[in-house]
Image 1 (tube, one colour):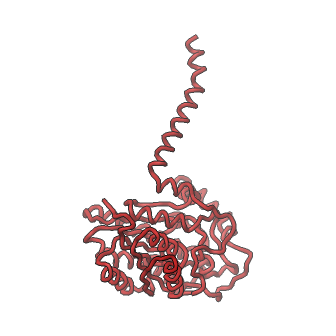
Image 2 (cartoon, rainbow, N blue to C red):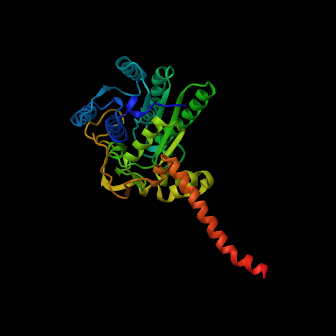
Image 3 (cartoon, rainbow, N blue to C red):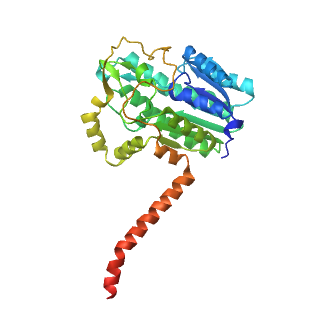
Length: 342
Protein backbone atom coordinates (compact mmCIF):
# COMPACT_ATOMS: atom_id res chain seq x y z
CA UNK A 1 0.00 0.00 0.00
CA UNK A 2 1.40 3.36 -1.06
CA UNK A 3 0.79 6.47 1.04
CA UNK A 4 1.48 10.02 -0.11
CA UNK A 5 4.40 12.08 1.18
CA UNK A 6 3.30 14.27 4.06
CA UNK A 7 3.83 17.48 2.10
CA UNK A 8 1.16 16.29 -0.38
CA UNK A 9 -1.38 15.24 2.23
CA UNK A 10 -4.63 16.62 3.58
CA UNK A 11 -4.65 15.71 7.27
CA UNK A 12 -7.34 15.82 9.96
CA UNK A 13 -6.19 15.80 13.58
CA UNK A 14 -8.88 15.13 16.19
CA UNK A 15 -7.98 16.22 19.71
CA UNK A 16 -5.53 18.95 18.73
CA UNK A 17 -6.03 21.58 21.43
CA UNK A 18 -3.27 20.26 23.68
CA UNK A 19 -0.72 17.53 24.22
CA UNK A 20 0.01 14.91 21.58
CA UNK A 21 -2.62 16.16 19.15
CA UNK A 22 -1.36 19.73 19.31
CA UNK A 23 2.25 18.70 18.68
CA UNK A 24 1.14 16.41 15.86
CA UNK A 25 -0.80 19.19 14.11
CA UNK A 26 2.19 21.52 14.42
CA UNK A 27 4.58 18.98 12.91
CA UNK A 28 2.24 18.10 10.04
CA UNK A 29 1.85 21.81 9.22
CA UNK A 30 5.59 22.41 9.33
CA UNK A 31 6.13 19.46 7.00
CA UNK A 32 3.83 21.07 4.43
CA UNK A 33 0.57 19.17 4.94
CA UNK A 34 -2.82 20.87 4.74
CA UNK A 35 -4.08 20.52 8.31
CA UNK A 36 -7.61 20.59 9.73
CA UNK A 37 -8.13 20.21 13.47
CA UNK A 38 -11.04 19.30 15.75
CA UNK A 39 -11.47 19.55 19.52
CA UNK A 40 -14.01 20.38 22.19
CA UNK A 41 -11.66 23.10 23.49
CA UNK A 42 -12.28 26.18 21.32
CA UNK A 43 -9.71 28.26 23.17
CA UNK A 44 -7.01 25.64 22.63
CA UNK A 45 -7.75 25.51 18.91
CA UNK A 46 -7.68 29.30 18.65
CA UNK A 47 -4.26 29.53 20.29
CA UNK A 48 -2.98 26.69 18.11
CA UNK A 49 -4.16 28.45 14.96
CA UNK A 50 -2.60 31.73 16.13
CA UNK A 51 0.69 30.01 16.94
CA UNK A 52 0.90 28.35 13.53
CA UNK A 53 -0.13 31.56 11.76
CA UNK A 54 2.78 33.37 13.41
CA UNK A 55 4.96 30.54 12.13
CA UNK A 56 3.69 31.03 8.57
CA UNK A 57 1.17 28.17 8.50
CA UNK A 58 -2.62 28.24 8.24
CA UNK A 59 -4.95 25.57 9.60
CA UNK A 60 -8.72 25.18 9.73
CA UNK A 61 -10.42 24.54 13.05
CA UNK A 62 -13.72 22.93 14.08
CA UNK A 63 -15.15 22.70 17.59
CA UNK A 64 -17.12 19.70 18.77
CA UNK A 65 -17.37 16.66 21.03
CA UNK A 66 -16.11 13.30 19.75
CA UNK A 67 -18.98 11.66 21.63
CA UNK A 68 -21.21 13.30 18.98
CA UNK A 69 -20.89 11.16 15.85
CA UNK A 70 -22.66 13.74 13.69
CA UNK A 71 -20.14 16.41 14.69
CA UNK A 72 -17.27 14.23 13.46
CA UNK A 73 -19.08 13.34 10.24
CA UNK A 74 -19.64 17.05 9.64
CA UNK A 75 -15.98 17.77 10.32
CA UNK A 76 -14.77 15.07 7.92
CA UNK A 77 -17.18 16.34 5.28
CA UNK A 78 -15.95 19.90 5.71
CA UNK A 79 -12.36 18.77 5.13
CA UNK A 80 -13.31 17.09 1.86
CA UNK A 81 -15.50 20.01 0.81
CA UNK A 82 -12.56 22.40 1.33
CA UNK A 83 -9.78 20.26 -0.16
CA UNK A 84 -11.46 17.68 -2.33
CA UNK A 85 -10.07 14.73 -0.38
CA UNK A 86 -8.81 13.38 2.94
CA UNK A 87 -5.51 11.49 3.12
CA UNK A 88 -4.82 10.92 6.82
CA UNK A 89 -7.08 10.88 9.86
CA UNK A 90 -5.36 11.13 13.25
CA UNK A 91 -7.48 10.53 16.33
CA UNK A 92 -5.83 11.67 19.58
CA UNK A 93 -8.70 12.63 21.88
CA UNK A 94 -8.64 11.05 25.33
CA UNK A 95 -9.81 11.92 28.84
CA UNK A 96 -8.72 10.56 32.20
CA UNK A 97 -10.39 9.62 35.47
CA UNK A 98 -8.27 8.64 38.47
CA UNK A 99 -10.46 6.69 40.87
CA UNK A 100 -11.00 3.16 42.07
CA UNK A 101 -13.93 1.42 40.44
CA UNK A 102 -15.85 1.57 43.72
CA UNK A 103 -15.46 5.35 43.75
CA UNK A 104 -16.48 5.74 40.10
CA UNK A 105 -20.09 6.58 39.24
CA UNK A 106 -21.68 4.95 36.22
CA UNK A 107 -22.15 8.39 34.67
CA UNK A 108 -18.39 8.99 34.92
CA UNK A 109 -17.52 5.53 33.63
CA UNK A 110 -19.90 5.94 30.71
CA UNK A 111 -18.41 9.31 29.78
CA UNK A 112 -14.89 7.85 29.56
CA UNK A 113 -16.19 5.10 27.28
CA UNK A 114 -18.11 7.60 25.15
CA UNK A 115 -15.04 9.75 24.56
CA UNK A 116 -12.13 7.31 24.56
CA UNK A 117 -13.75 4.33 22.85
CA UNK A 118 -16.89 5.44 21.03
CA UNK A 119 -15.16 8.69 20.07
CA UNK A 120 -12.51 6.63 18.23
CA UNK A 121 -15.24 4.56 16.58
CA UNK A 122 -17.08 7.72 15.54
CA UNK A 123 -13.84 9.05 14.07
CA UNK A 124 -13.22 5.96 11.97
CA UNK A 125 -16.85 5.94 10.86
CA UNK A 126 -16.57 9.59 9.78
CA UNK A 127 -13.24 9.22 7.98
CA UNK A 128 -13.54 5.87 6.22
CA UNK A 129 -16.07 6.84 3.54
CA UNK A 130 -13.72 9.62 2.41
CA UNK A 131 -10.57 7.49 2.56
CA UNK A 132 -12.00 4.57 0.58
CA UNK A 133 -11.92 6.29 -2.80
CA UNK A 134 -8.25 7.33 -2.90
CA UNK A 135 -6.78 5.34 -0.02
CA UNK A 136 -5.03 6.78 3.03
CA UNK A 137 -4.25 6.27 6.68
CA UNK A 138 -6.34 5.87 9.80
CA UNK A 139 -4.13 6.53 12.84
CA UNK A 140 -5.57 6.10 16.31
CA UNK A 141 -3.75 6.89 19.55
CA UNK A 142 -4.56 4.44 22.32
CA UNK A 143 -2.15 3.53 25.13
CA UNK A 144 -0.07 0.68 26.51
CA UNK A 145 -3.06 0.36 28.82
CA UNK A 146 -4.80 -1.25 25.87
CA UNK A 147 -2.89 -4.31 27.10
CA UNK A 148 -1.50 -3.45 30.57
CA UNK A 149 -3.97 -1.96 33.06
CA UNK A 150 -3.02 0.08 36.12
CA UNK A 151 -5.00 0.77 39.30
CA UNK A 152 -7.31 3.81 39.34
CA UNK A 153 -7.97 3.24 35.61
CA UNK A 154 -10.90 0.84 35.36
CA UNK A 155 -12.76 3.10 32.92
CA UNK A 156 -9.67 4.29 31.07
CA UNK A 157 -8.17 0.81 30.66
CA UNK A 158 -11.54 -0.59 29.56
CA UNK A 159 -11.79 2.10 26.89
CA UNK A 160 -8.27 1.48 25.59
CA UNK A 161 -8.77 -2.30 25.55
CA UNK A 162 -11.86 -1.62 23.45
CA UNK A 163 -9.94 0.58 21.01
CA UNK A 164 -7.31 -2.14 20.62
CA UNK A 165 -9.90 -4.79 19.77
CA UNK A 166 -11.78 -2.46 17.44
CA UNK A 167 -8.68 -1.52 15.45
CA UNK A 168 -7.47 -5.11 15.18
CA UNK A 169 -10.82 -6.16 13.75
CA UNK A 170 -11.07 -3.17 11.41
CA UNK A 171 -7.54 -3.80 10.08
CA UNK A 172 -8.32 -7.45 9.31
CA UNK A 173 -11.57 -6.56 7.55
CA UNK A 174 -10.04 -3.84 5.39
CA UNK A 175 -7.07 -6.04 4.40
CA UNK A 176 -9.39 -8.93 3.59
CA UNK A 177 -11.45 -6.71 1.30
CA UNK A 178 -8.37 -5.17 -0.35
CA UNK A 179 -9.23 -1.67 0.87
CA UNK A 180 -6.23 0.69 0.43
CA UNK A 181 -6.49 2.18 3.93
CA UNK A 182 -3.83 1.48 6.55
CA UNK A 183 -4.94 1.22 10.18
CA UNK A 184 -2.33 2.11 12.80
CA UNK A 185 -2.58 1.93 16.58
CA UNK A 186 -0.14 4.20 18.39
CA UNK A 187 0.42 2.90 21.94
CA UNK A 188 2.28 5.44 24.10
CA UNK A 189 3.69 4.83 27.55
CA UNK A 190 3.38 7.78 29.98
CA UNK A 191 3.78 11.03 28.04
CA UNK A 192 4.50 14.46 29.52
CA UNK A 193 1.33 16.28 28.42
CA UNK A 194 -1.39 18.23 30.31
CA UNK A 195 -3.43 14.98 30.47
CA UNK A 196 -2.67 14.58 34.18
CA UNK A 197 -3.55 18.19 35.04
CA UNK A 198 -6.85 17.94 33.17
CA UNK A 199 -7.95 14.52 34.42
CA UNK A 200 -10.62 14.19 37.06
CA UNK A 201 -9.15 12.79 40.28
CA UNK A 202 -10.87 11.11 43.22
CA UNK A 203 -7.66 9.98 44.90
CA UNK A 204 -7.24 13.20 46.89
CA UNK A 205 -4.12 14.39 45.07
CA UNK A 206 -3.06 15.45 41.62
CA UNK A 207 -2.24 12.32 39.61
CA UNK A 208 0.91 11.68 37.61
CA UNK A 209 2.06 9.24 34.97
CA UNK A 210 3.85 6.01 35.82
CA UNK A 211 7.53 6.88 35.24
CA UNK A 212 9.49 7.19 33.11
CA UNK A 213 7.70 9.73 30.94
CA UNK A 214 8.45 10.55 27.32
CA UNK A 215 8.04 13.71 25.29
CA UNK A 216 4.94 14.35 23.12
CA UNK A 217 7.28 14.78 20.14
CA UNK A 218 8.12 11.07 20.25
CA UNK A 219 4.46 10.22 19.74
CA UNK A 220 4.03 12.88 17.06
CA UNK A 221 6.99 11.50 15.10
CA UNK A 222 5.52 7.99 15.31
CA UNK A 223 2.25 9.36 13.92
CA UNK A 224 3.99 11.16 11.07
CA UNK A 225 5.89 7.98 10.24
CA UNK A 226 2.62 6.00 10.10
CA UNK A 227 1.12 8.64 7.80
CA UNK A 228 3.73 7.72 5.18
CA UNK A 229 4.44 4.07 6.01
CA UNK A 230 1.58 1.58 6.53
CA UNK A 231 2.20 0.23 10.04
CA UNK A 232 -0.08 -1.84 12.24
CA UNK A 233 1.25 -0.74 15.62
CA UNK A 234 3.90 1.50 17.15
CA UNK A 235 4.69 1.39 20.87
CA UNK A 236 6.14 4.70 22.02
CA UNK A 237 8.67 4.42 24.83
CA UNK A 238 11.00 1.61 25.76
CA UNK A 239 9.37 1.34 29.19
CA UNK A 240 6.06 0.67 27.47
CA UNK A 241 7.61 -2.13 25.43
CA UNK A 242 9.04 -3.65 28.58
CA UNK A 243 5.66 -3.51 30.32
CA UNK A 244 3.92 -5.15 27.37
CA UNK A 245 6.50 -7.92 27.18
CA UNK A 246 6.23 -8.54 30.91
CA UNK A 247 2.44 -8.71 30.61
CA UNK A 248 2.72 -11.16 27.71
CA UNK A 249 5.23 -13.57 29.18
CA UNK A 250 4.76 -13.20 32.96
CA UNK A 251 1.36 -11.58 33.60
CA UNK A 252 1.52 -12.54 37.27
CA UNK A 253 4.68 -10.47 37.70
CA UNK A 254 3.05 -7.45 36.04
CA UNK A 255 0.01 -7.74 38.31
CA UNK A 256 2.23 -8.04 41.38
CA UNK A 257 4.12 -4.91 40.30
CA UNK A 258 0.86 -2.98 39.88
CA UNK A 259 -0.40 -4.06 43.30
CA UNK A 260 2.86 -3.15 45.00
CA UNK A 261 3.86 0.03 43.18
CA UNK A 262 1.03 1.07 40.84
CA UNK A 263 -0.80 3.23 43.38
CA UNK A 264 2.10 5.25 44.76
CA UNK A 265 3.69 5.80 41.34
CA UNK A 266 0.57 7.66 40.17
CA UNK A 267 0.22 9.97 43.17
CA UNK A 268 1.84 13.35 43.72
CA UNK A 269 2.01 15.17 47.06
CA UNK A 270 -0.17 17.99 45.70
CA UNK A 271 -3.73 17.93 47.11
CA UNK A 272 -6.49 18.05 44.53
CA UNK A 273 -10.21 17.47 45.02
CA UNK A 274 -12.73 15.83 42.72
CA UNK A 275 -14.37 19.27 42.36
CA UNK A 276 -11.26 20.82 40.81
CA UNK A 277 -11.61 21.82 37.14
CA UNK A 278 -11.28 18.82 34.84
CA UNK A 279 -12.16 17.83 31.29
CA UNK A 280 -14.34 14.79 31.97
CA UNK A 281 -17.55 16.43 30.77
CA UNK A 282 -16.20 19.40 28.83
CA UNK A 283 -13.23 21.60 28.02
CA UNK A 284 -11.17 23.08 30.85
CA UNK A 285 -9.80 25.83 28.61
CA UNK A 286 -6.56 26.52 30.44
CA UNK A 287 -4.17 23.81 29.25
CA UNK A 288 -3.55 24.79 25.62
CA UNK A 289 0.04 23.53 25.68
CA UNK A 290 1.94 20.56 24.33
CA UNK A 291 3.87 19.65 27.46
CA UNK A 292 2.55 19.22 30.95
CA UNK A 293 4.06 20.31 34.24
CA UNK A 294 4.64 16.74 35.38
CA UNK A 295 8.40 16.99 35.86
CA UNK A 296 10.01 13.92 37.37
CA UNK A 297 11.87 11.39 35.27
CA UNK A 298 11.22 12.37 31.64
CA UNK A 299 13.32 11.11 28.76
CA UNK A 300 13.97 13.68 26.04
CA UNK A 301 13.87 10.98 23.36
CA UNK A 302 12.92 7.34 23.10
CA UNK A 303 15.66 5.39 21.32
CA UNK A 304 13.33 2.43 21.00
CA UNK A 305 10.71 4.48 19.15
CA UNK A 306 13.33 6.17 16.99
CA UNK A 307 14.63 2.78 15.86
CA UNK A 308 11.08 1.58 15.12
CA UNK A 309 10.57 4.57 12.83
CA UNK A 310 13.97 4.08 11.18
CA UNK A 311 13.78 0.37 10.26
CA UNK A 312 16.90 0.32 8.09
CA UNK A 313 19.03 1.62 10.94
CA UNK A 314 17.36 -0.83 13.31
CA UNK A 315 18.05 -3.73 10.97
CA UNK A 316 21.69 -2.71 10.61
CA UNK A 317 22.03 -2.41 14.39
CA UNK A 318 20.50 -5.85 14.88
CA UNK A 319 22.84 -7.38 12.30
CA UNK A 320 25.83 -5.69 13.91
CA UNK A 321 24.74 -6.93 17.34
CA UNK A 322 24.35 -10.49 16.07
CA UNK A 323 27.75 -10.25 14.40
CA UNK A 324 29.31 -9.05 17.65
CA UNK A 325 27.71 -11.89 19.62
CA UNK A 326 28.90 -14.40 17.02
CA UNK A 327 32.45 -13.05 17.18
CA UNK A 328 32.43 -13.21 20.98
CA UNK A 329 31.21 -16.81 20.97
CA UNK A 330 33.83 -17.75 18.36
CA UNK A 331 36.62 -16.21 20.47
CA UNK A 332 35.51 -18.09 23.55
CA UNK A 333 35.23 -21.36 21.66
CA UNK A 334 38.64 -21.06 19.94
CA UNK A 335 40.77 -22.19 22.94
CA UNK A 336 38.57 -25.26 23.33
CA UNK A 337 38.89 -26.14 19.65
CA UNK A 338 42.67 -25.67 19.82
CA UNK A 339 42.88 -27.83 22.91
CA UNK A 340 40.82 -30.51 21.21
CA UNK A 341 43.18 -30.63 18.26
CA UNK A 342 46.14 -31.25 20.58
